[in-house]
Image (cartoon, rainbow, N blue to C red; front, side, top):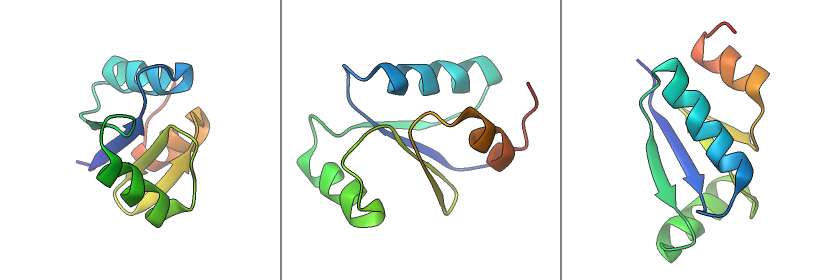
Amino acid sequence: MHTVTVYSTPSCHFCHMAKDYFKEKGVEFTDIDVAADPAKRKEMVDLTKQLGVPVIRIDDSFVVGFNKPRLMELLGLSD
């Protein structure tokens, strides 16, 4: 079981794509709305030096954007 966190905003198309993908694959995740939570937005930037979303944390690895091949690799998923 992996620990998955998605730092996202409500208007981000790629954030929705990532969350829909996780739901489709049965991957449990925590969604953090960085538009509504300044402390979590700062946490995201401090961890990754990225302002863009989604930032997806899988265990101790970070993926910036909806990089499906990398997500599949980190989660051990197939298409």
